[in-house]
Image (cartoon, rainbow, N blue to C red; front, side, top):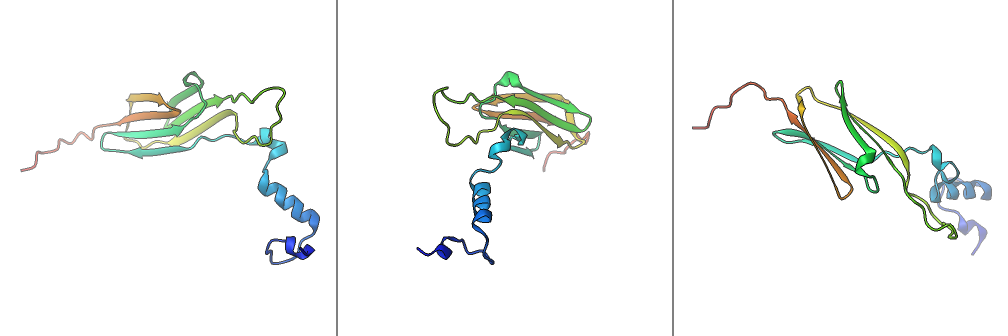
Length: 143
């Protein structure tokens, strides 16, 4: 295979050093600076007729390491995940699971009922259910 066949189809030719740097960044981003990366759990925030619901993926997080609070008009989710990495005599080839503290903050609508909050934590998924304030308007039965 000719040397020029080793390049991807870049619009210009790049040096071998630049190509190695690009390959290292694509294959193992932030490898040497992993402690600088923050962990942000994925969340879904939606509503139904009665409540606003937050669901957060928190695999490996213990329930006692999670805090949920409402401050002013924000729902704040805090916690930490500690991942124990393998045996002392083993060698890692890839470490991608991030550990450490996280904070997620979501703006809440004005119609939340701060007194009606339920929290569930099952199979690594945190579910926060926040009731809605009643509109004060009585709905008339159909008919």
